[in-house]
Length: 366
Image (tube, rainbow, N blue to C red; front, side, top):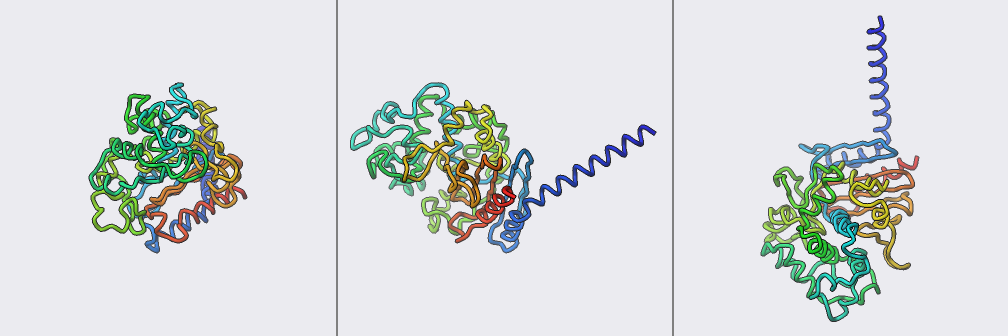
């Protein structure tokens, strides 16, 4: 009799748990429908939505052969991940944010360079361009990251450091080069050791890591960014889908991750758990470091309402990627939103990732 009562109670509890999970999943119906429609209309070939809201997680893949843990090329979401590795070196006391870059890269001197600090590099106010003029030549010759750094070091500044905001992938590159010198490890190894392993990001790699290229979701090259070879029929061996680019592990755009792993990464900062960085360092990365009138930036992260979706709070932080990716965390609603797609940002006037993320933000407020 007791056994029957126990089994009945267990079955009732399981049914109640499934019902509750179904009800919670329904919260994100608007976002899932947007992505499902984009796949059915063949606008995008693959996507994964991951949401964590007040402790409850939801993940859904879209497209043929796509799973919860499918790995996408992140584009610029790579930046906060790589900057986290840089800040792990900061936590060891090996540099200060206002140290001049020339302290660690002595050749970075003259013509205003002496005034550039590591903080300038991380907040896009260094005066360095987004890409070096030799970008296509370097990529087409399959240059290593060191060659990109050497080219950046001799690139003229476009304005006085700290006087203007200008998005700069090469600023992030130099910051990671400094971390390599101070740690004695290349950035691919450093990211794996200081970010992926402590955060248990098991479907993530800087470059390809231990994974095969065919395990990664290909990027739709229609509408791809020019610096990635978009629109150039001769760029097949160095574009986003090339073996060269996938292996390179560019700190400004060459990280591969699954959507739930990005959720784990953002959770480290949303709750300052101290697994990868000291809690005070995590908070330092997600607060604005730029003057009034400049685009707000944390260290590697975008911060403020504009870094999230419509309805997000001023405390939001996140990043997007030109490969068709988006992620943000909003402490006000205790929500993490990750949308990874195969469609480049330039591939749609109003990208499905934006529609889906806006619907997540709206549902999180309700």
